[in-house]
Image (tube, rainbow, N blue to C red; front, side, top):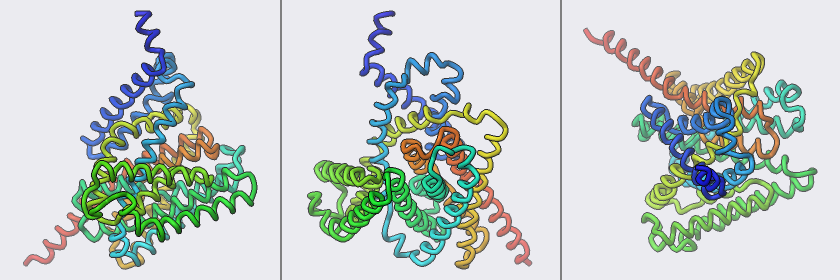
Length: 425
């Protein structure tokens, strides 16, 4: 037995044990949550939290320290970043320009209001939070990051909710996808600015980094995108990509991620942009998404959930004040995203029921929010307590999407039933 324990301490054996525990836990919790009508990603994020100090570390600290020693966290984090880069690449692939063209005017108005209102509220919350919870973080960086984090919508989770409910082809579903696409692109551009400010030591490097990013985005959209099919070796850009094209696409994604990391922004922004500029054919994008998403979501992203869980410590919220602040953050997040989107949608002529449904969908934050929060944690923008509160906010706002949509649909059917009764002789 001693020999087995000694062998288990080897780096390879320990890494394999971590993989095994993480994947089994995330799969089990994801399946459980899916049975209750919740997105599986909520269960997977919850599994990551339970593996950390919030539960397992509290019940069995020696076991957690054995399986997840501090020295191994950096290795898990680096491997998980590969999975997150692939995930952001897939998010970019799923942004369909056709949806933007069909709903351009309404989507631009609604998504911009749905960004500006929560961003403003996030900056306002930062005035309140920074002195007590983030005194070590420069106010400008903290305020901009909080505003951006409050503005996020989880585009991939939203798409899956619409598919599960059969709303993809409806007017509400198309508008929701268009708004989420515009909002995601805007939020990631805002995040790029925040990261540039956080990483730069003075104004000049910040302006240089932002200038490089503007040039890079322009080149990607105007120069690279029109020729990318040929460069990837896709002889038929309307067909699903083969192995060679897939490999070339991953090389292109990695190069794009590397360039934005070198520019002082973040590798994830480059991976996201690489997905955006992929050939526009739906067959091509869908084929590449299927090949990448299954492996990434089943094997690599669970590592990211575990790393996030090891950072999330519910024990840091150790008094009534902390929990009240957390509840306040959740309330502000809902008011900004759901309320802002709902009001903007109503101004375009939508009825209150569909406006509320759209606001509920835009309030879904999920995994994308977790990606953003981990960037803030890595850069030292978010201290432990605020990071934990924001993770709980991401879970709460995503968890409530399904029940709220069920309630809205129930009330809509009840109202239609009453109208039918009044109309009948």
